[in-house]
Image 1: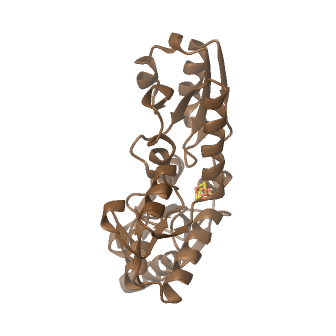
Image 2: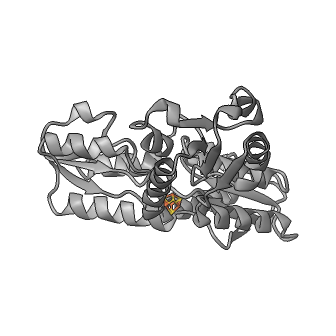
Length: 286
Ligand code: SF4
């Protein structure tokens, strides 16, 4: 049995830095605080942080003192003001790419453009972009059907921005539809290269004749992990692995090479654990 890891997989630079910052904070005795939302979309990382004394909080209302950690996905600017008003210390792990999108959206609004975020309205990153804005200044859409429900003739100029973890190719039809409906539209290049690299690498793994099946490792709530699985299964038998209990020994019958990839919020140790467990399961069946 052989494992072949994708050329790019797992933690992106933004998540790696966020993870390090929170661990450093916890190890330096920072036990008076919490993380607003999952620091990354991975249950293992969340429980690891809780064990280090930094629990995950659902809202700003749950903390009145100490340090609030803002995750790599970022938060609405008003959350920074709220933290300041409460005299909280802020450990900001927002990814610089996410800040770029906040800036790009502000600049577009300043020139009178209407904002269109292609993304999921309930995703923390998108909430960060939209929460504080006047609802008449933006739309969030994910499908052509949703885009068709909007009267675009009301807007002269439109700026299209993407949630960083989406694959632009998958939403080309949405962007094109919007562009066909307005006088002037421009796209901001906001897809994160880290996501694209992981996606290109899983396609490469799927096209590799040596690889018999692909395991995609990642958190249950991680959209980019799920997307890797969707891409992988188009090319090879492909299974999502959220934890070791998901592994089914029958998957590995007559398999010699397993392709491995992982979502942007999957820690390296989880990938090692999965490989070790697969070895153990396969040996047990021999
Ligand atoms: S996926 Fe990209 S934008 Fe998101 S945290 Fe990672 S590096 Fe930043």
